Image 1 (cartoon, one colour):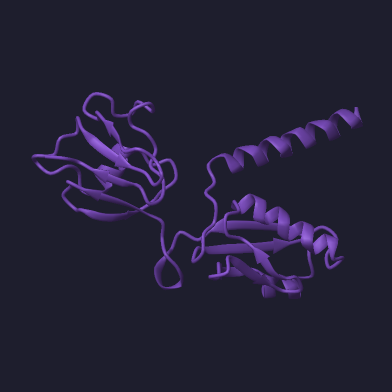
Image 2 (cartoon, rainbow, N blue to C red):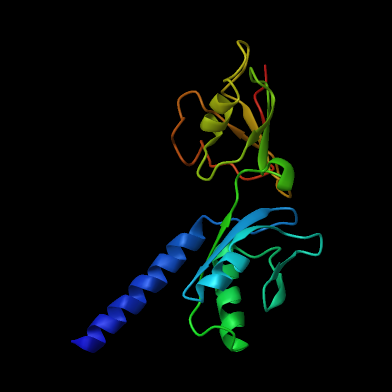
Amino acid sequence: MKQALIVFQFLFVSLSSVMAQSGELPLRKGDRITISIGAIPDNEVAQIRGIYTISDSGTVNLLHIGEVKAQGVKPSSLQKVIEQTYVAREIYTRPNVLVSIDGGGGEGGPTRNVTITGVNKPGAIPFKQNMSLTQAIMTAGGPTPFGNMKKVKLIRSGRVPTIHNLTSNAGNPQVDVQVEPDDQIIVPE
């Protein structure tokens, strides 16, 4: 019975990890991340916990372990790397690390954006996880009075631009796709 419980816990943790990673974005230079740590001495928690900006060299500098590569790594993977590094160097026995992207942007680093034209408030809007084309357009004030929602163009880096008919297909994930950081959306007239 005890072995079955251990196997169940392992599968649950593994499944939770996979689910957490599925929607994650890789970190980039300039991203602000929040690092929290537990299961270590209280006086060192305050020295490590905080907001870090990923440097131009793509790293963050942490107490006792120094530079850790963060650029191109998903937050859940960075958590594991930090935990494993602390354990491998015999600094902490079982640290519990949580890494999240700080969505604030502001002075400390860039916010990930989506750029939209042909709307009432053209320009960049902050990227949000699971945001669809229609939601992005509505966040930017909706289409102009002459905007053609039948021919919305999505330009995504490194890919051929795609055209989406959002008049009767809004909400259909095949047409009303989720946006990604740095996408460009054009609502033509």
